[in-house]
Structure formats: structure tokens, C-alpha cells
Length: 122
Image (cartoon, rainbow, N blue to C red; front, top):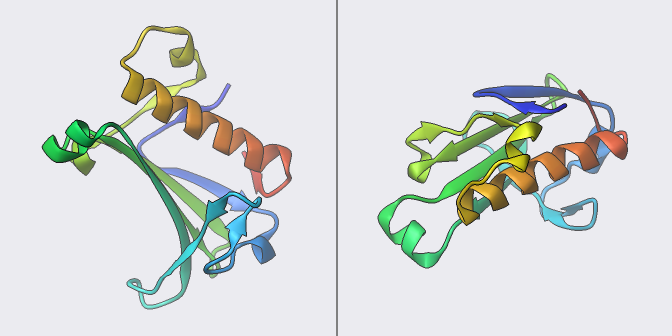
């Protein structure tokens, strides 16, 4: 069972797949982030309606591949980034609002796909 914590770190087994402006697994567009002084490759997604975004009640998740350490960091947030978003697969069996459910389902499927494709190690 996958558990998404405040800070999630995974060992990357196929670092050659992380390139700026390319699609990871053909569907997740990566961008280069040089704000840390070195090159890191990122992907992010926001969940919610226009109203959620307008009032800052949306959920989001971001990954960052760090070539120097060969790790992938994953972070989930809610309320426009003010709070961490922590959950596990069991939460998918419970009743949640649409925004939370879409976010949790996407992240669990995303992590499982990276594990199944041999890109990261749990």
C-alpha cells in the first residue's frame, strides 16, 4: 500500500528519462528548474475548478528529479500550497470531495506507474 507523506523521496533507476521539455512516459511534460543552482527536472499538476483556484482551495502535486542525488522528491499540497496533503491508498475507498479524490487517484496511479515501469524504487 502506498502512503503519501509530507516529504516523499524515491530512488530513480532510469535517470536518462528525465529531460527538460520532454514527456516522461509520453504524457508528463518535464521542465528544468535552475533555482537551486543546479539543474533539476520537474512536473506539477493542479486539481480543482476555476473557483477552487480563484479562492486558493485547490490541491496540487509536484515532483522534482535531482540528478546529483539520483532522487525524485514528491510533494502534495492543499489550500493553494499552504498545507501538506497526506494520504494512503485506503483513502480512495472513502468518500471525499471531487477535488481531493482526483488528486489522490492521480498521485497514487502516477507513483504506481513509475514503479511498474522501473523508473523509481519504492
